[in-house]
Length: 214
Length: 114
Image (cartoon, rainbow over all chains, first blue to last red):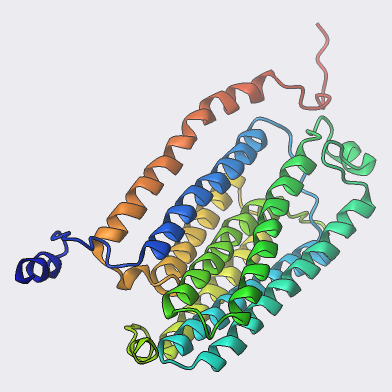
């Protein structure tokens, strides 16, 4: 056993616990790696289309930019409440952790509601996945109808992750007393990852398509 | 026994640290939104926005996702592979720029008589 302790001492030691995390946590990290490649591929596909086409820049200050900025604030704050949950759980305060997790999930739900309102604004303007509103097509002649496909595809995929995360967090909150600390930490990893993805979606989708005149 | 073990969890980082990270993330976001209304060429915008986003992502991964406090082994397993794979996705861009030349980009403002 002394050799194991020695092997674990150094960063390159490896030993029997090369990562010093549980198998579930390692699994979540591997999932996060694959999921970040999914989002990278979506965003690169978007960048490919954008660089090879005339691209509309239609987002008005209100509602789009105001809504998306508030959504960013909500998601960043939900990450903070999640950190508080993990911190409370690490100190053995399970009921406090439960409250923080529920707060996180509610902020996530707020994000989904705000995003749905923002979607409905665009849908009512006439934006469809494979069709631009007539007004936009006139203002940006020759622009690609795939604007809606990338917008709804990427933000929809992200919203799906937030939705899944909310359900995950509510389940974790309900079972918090039975779960180990590491399980709560793992749900935190997923939630922070969803936040991280939005940190790329928000500037690439919204801020690079601001309508400077409105 | 397990309940006792739970109270002994190793957890690095104070609430003050997490609040300051959150504050910096908000500040960078505010800067990004402000930048959206400064009329810079799209290439500069892209570079600055991506730079700010990468800083934000690094802060989230390092502190919120706690990776900074994990073993170096785990960090070296996750980060370099991901960075390389994402960069490899950029091989398609030369084709994207070529396709731009082939596309109809609206009526030319001053048609020349030939």
